[in-house]
Image (cartoon, rainbow, N blue to C red):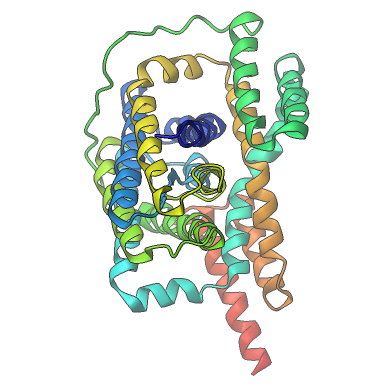
Length: 381
């Protein structure tokens, strides 16, 4: 096994884990997960990604690198009035929709018919409050927050992919050195998965499950397939959606939200420097799976350390991690002039955080955007 392949898989996994683990923990906190359920969530999603990456890569002989849904985690973290059991039901529902998208062509066409601008406007509206929180915490806790922002900005000049990971490390140092965080209680033991009985609440399925499915498809799976094509591989779309959908639904029983194709971290594993022989490059997916398995088993050490940090630091690291996705979503939302107004309506309603009938803002933002889009289309006819 070439050293370059091992290093590429290791860097991709550590960047993916370190840059957004704080957001996953924020999502778990938002739905009231306790310490055991949170640890199970992190372990389950690590194992889910590991199994999917190894299975697809070895089966299709294509370097398939999976990730957890970062915008999905942001969507969950922004939800209110949802408990962990309702969330598990929504995760199963979203995974089921991903599986059905692979199997039912009309559903695939219906998802593809949603204008890119509208879908991106919904994603941007979900992400905006998290990035705005960085400035708010910088004003309220400057001693804790400003050094993180400085580290992020300086490392970003050298290596943008490592900037959030560096900010997380700096946050750990500050928290336990100057922030007054108590030493985490860490037991050296194997990670245990905790079964979480799902509750299929209709309002939660519409307000969380459906938007989770849509942002995962629009902002993760489609770009992930595009990255593979850009590197000369034909992605096995049906197989990828089937595997990630089934795994997402199964591991939702242990708290995990959806997994999907990776885009940015996948690019690390696809270049000529990984392996000169393209036909052998699929093995990076297996190495990547081994790294994620190790990270899942390391949860009893990593998760308590992060949870012991002051909440301001966790929120700022999560907000910094979401700046690049927010930029991409805003550019995509307002790129096409024909859907610009509909995208603005979607963005405004989603970012407002409005909830009605127990259904969250992401659903209402999507509905508003589609309504405006339909009216605009009728006007042009």
